[in-house]
Image (cartoon, rainbow, N blue to C red; front, side, top):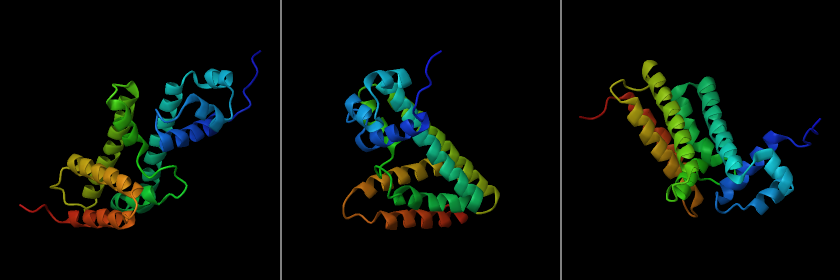
Amino acid sequence: MPRKPNYDRDDLIERARDLFWRSGWAGTSLKDLEAGLQMKPGSFYAAFGSKDALFELALERYALDGRERLRRLARDHGPLAALQQFPALVIGNKEAPAKACMLSKTLLELQAHNHPLAETANLHLLKMEGQFSELFEQAQSSGEIDKSYDSRILARRYQSDLLGLRVSAERNGVDAAAIAAEIARGLSALSNPPLA
């Protein structure tokens, strides 16, 4: 009978996510992973198969965590308030390995090389955009946002604003909290119909 591994797989994926998020796919070597996860090469390959397989699990963990945080915000505060609070939340985590979005970093790093994980990151970004769109639709249904706006376009713009915010948060001398507050204020203006 095979021996049961003496590690917590979820914890290892979380630690790998943080390594990849900080340093990127190319900047994280197998030696970095083995040291960061405290695994020998044989155990690493037995547990995950390859660096790419672990990176894909780390991307999925990152994306699921982000969608779940947004879901909780919407459940606790409503759709518009969730969308308004989310920008400050994503840049306010002092424990995060980086301020920039791991999915967008991956897309930018790997798309130029036609690496399949770039498309994986893109699919996660599209799922997040879909979640934003659903929240905009819910806010329209509740009367918080005027119904004449296209929720899909609002979601794309919002995601673009978030990604820009997260890059700005990486820069020295940029008041990212003020930008997050401005994004939130801008959403309040959507209660009025768009200007002709």
